[in-house]
Amino acid sequence: MESLAAVQELEAQVRRRMVGVSFTIDPPAASNGSWWIDVEREGRIASIEWRPGRGFGIAAPHGGYGEGVDFIVDDASAAAEYVARVLQPYSSDVADSVLNSSVFQQELVAALTAHVDRAVSEIVHTTIEKLLLELRKQVGDVSADVRRVEHELCRIADKVLAERKVPAQSETDDPARRPE
Amino acid sequence: MYPPQVDSRRDVPEHPEVTRYRNRAHNTFVRTNGAIEIRDLGGEVLFRKAGADGDYVWKA
Image (cartoon, rainbow over all chains, first blue to last red):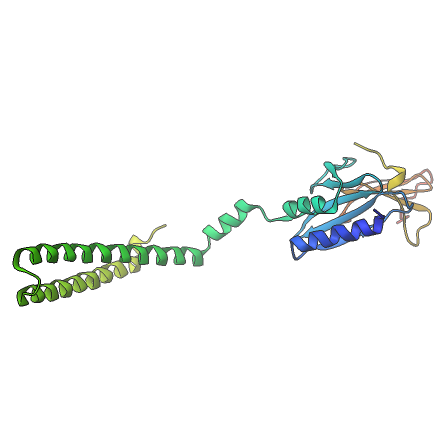
């Protein structure tokens, strides 16, 4: 592959994989010399050496003086894949920043609270269903008394669930009970 | 570890007496008087040594 075409292919392959990158292309003085393509993203630089007839040499950031490339690949796609991996933010840093985000923590608390509310509501209503089922077995389904009891149980269940949310809210307002 | 190689040689615009050699993370500048200067890719000077006439690569 002709050198300029190879360098352009590499640039296209990298841009296809990630945004926010800038390229510095450093051509040689001689036509058979090596090209260096420095790809920068958020302060990190991955350098690729293109040697005519040999392929793309990949170099991770922070190389020492006089060090060669880490390895050589034949095609621009493989080189671009490595560049994309080198320039991706560290996954552990991303995870830490997300976990430490107050917005994320609030969303987590809200999601867990909603989940607990749904679970408690299901338990209460399942218990009522069991009580009603037992009652129907004993006195029959059409009894006005059964319907009155059913109505009363539903009212009690709604009241229990509504009252449960009041102390739950006050707990989060109490600074002494806030999680650290 | 490689010293500056011929195939990594570059001309320096407006400084015909200076040759730049590029490698992985550094540029090495050599002046015809023998002065040497090594910079990282960010341009920070890591090392410099005057040539036989006492001048540095950029004479400054």
